[in-house]
Image (cartoon, rainbow, N blue to C red):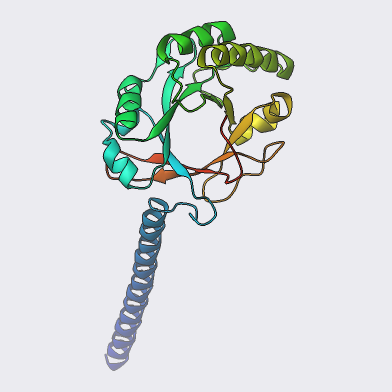
Length: 251
């Protein structure tokens, strides 16, 4: 009986020690999770506010589309946007439903603005140019148009580089005749790696890389989309934040 009691006490102590060890481990894991959540929250808070140093890049602006809702352009200007690029047309038939309103409201607020066309690899350049010309009016005070070049899940086509450059040259010639000024091209990193557009098309470039200067073009960028996670009073969701190279000119 005495031996059994001793064994019982020993087994109980071992169980208590095991439970205490589990509890300590869980507390450590919980603490680590809390720290990770705090770090993630801090990173998101920082990302939603970070912009390039104004001392290095005095002129900065935003990229806006319909996903930003009914934009209050006075608030956008007050947040430090010197200019805006607004999503306009997409392929041969798409048009951003807020484009006309955003362009007019930006001008009224004193924010110089330009249009973006999202280029499609699945549609003819002439059809896309017709869509752009139909919806983007020629204005002397508008910024040069931007041709956004990126892959799109809706379009599986991958033309040869020679065909793409030929079609893109056609598109640019037609919209530039309409606008009366040369356009910018804005290839994404993967698109540029595959097609080397900045080597084949002599246009001012707008490159994209969050938080770090992009270096994937054939020549220095004139505009940099530096943060695609900015949150501003006056716009829903996130906006793109852009910096202009000081010695660059968008013309």
